[in-house]
Length: 143
Image 1 (cartoon, rainbow, N blue to C red):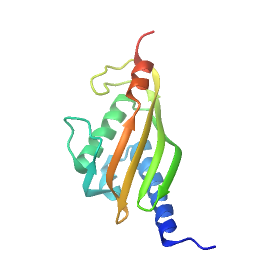
Image 2: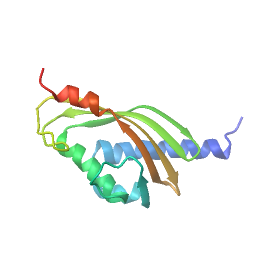
Image 3: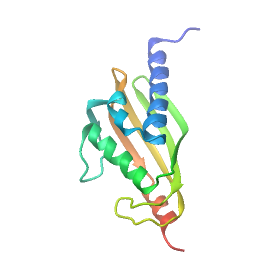
Image 4: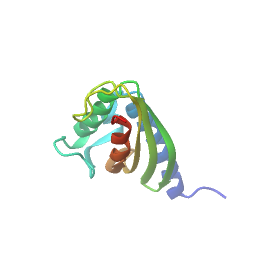
């Protein structure tokens, strides 16, 4: 049985999302944001005080890289349906720099993230995400 157009689009978007994770989140090649994110990108989960659009993507990923310079980004689960891709990812690294006001602790930690992205014309146009900040905070605290 051949794939429907809907299934082909979902498959292509999963590959695009794997590329996003590898290039931007894992390797930190933030000069390539525009290749993968549309100029009209909207982040529905944007932390206060950060810019919108592609600049917001650079700011968030730059903050993770600053706080955890040796981190790796791994996709644990990924599902796609049409233009939407859902991922459960981990970022594991050493807390060696300031991370959103938390000074470096030198501890290894894992940031768990679940998100949905929507693709239009081959690039991400929308994002909704949940970050396990309570779990991260617990890993960085004394005790």
